[in-house]
Image (cartoon, rainbow, N blue to C red; front, side, top):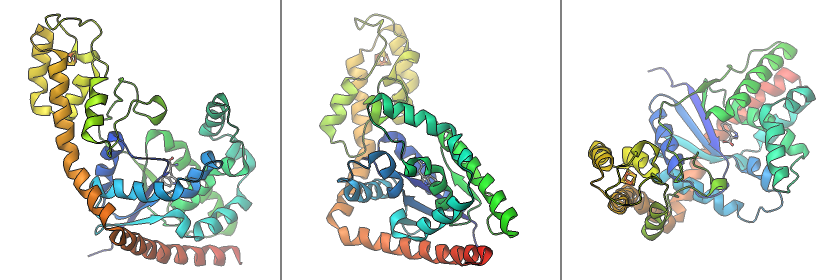
Length: 329
Ligand code: TRP
Ligand code: SF4
């Protein structure tokens, strides 16, 4: 059988994962059958915005891997590693920095947007490292010479940047080392936040995988419903209700019935929320069990990451040999 083509993706370890992330991880796990898959924690990237507060970084890296594993990523089927364990990423980033026009970095759409968003919160992230974010990301990606990168829409300019960089590198050194990685889009439906906006830490509208049952109850209780419903008998509009949207994800078989009863005014929001709370808790139970397993067996987690690092380093060393040869270093 021909070897599977490589694919890679990463996440910044900036805190616990929420239910929206869980859907992405579940999608990642489906890709493992098709591709030789590498997934890493982008811990150096996390420093770009949290350079003044790195105290949680080590914990966050472990926690995010635990969240991945409990969300269904099978360590037997993919390689899981930490960016900072593979020093070659730093070398490739440095070499790429020599050939990247400054203007390319300055015009990446996320650059100015993020600067402004952080400035609004009173934080200046206009560092050398932050400007180089897309370049480090390109190094992460190209190191594994993958055919594709599963990313969200927001990361698309970064993948395009990476493709441009490939062309420039090949042109400058007259080589052909890197396939131009294609973005891989998932078809998964996006889970909204508890207030119906995009689920995000900054909106405080998320449900974490590690939230205990009591917290789930509180968060579901606080979810946005149809504001027109005061009494149970008021006819509802499920399409504007976050609880209803969630029923579609976690209580699919009852969603149509809930829709009918809500519209007729024969189900109360309390009852509806209670049902959802139970469903989300039931969904999270096996995830909680796996989380407890890895928390209680730290050496197993270490082994998974050691194995992942070894596989990543092997490919990284091959790539760097080709790059050094191309540049005559
Ligand atoms: N920028 C990505 C994010 O914030 C994380 C990331 C870093 C990444 N390097 C990557 C994703 C390489 C895919 C490939 O989500
Ligand atoms: Fe939303 Fe359910 Fe209340 Fe209808 S009954 S408004 S679907 S919470």
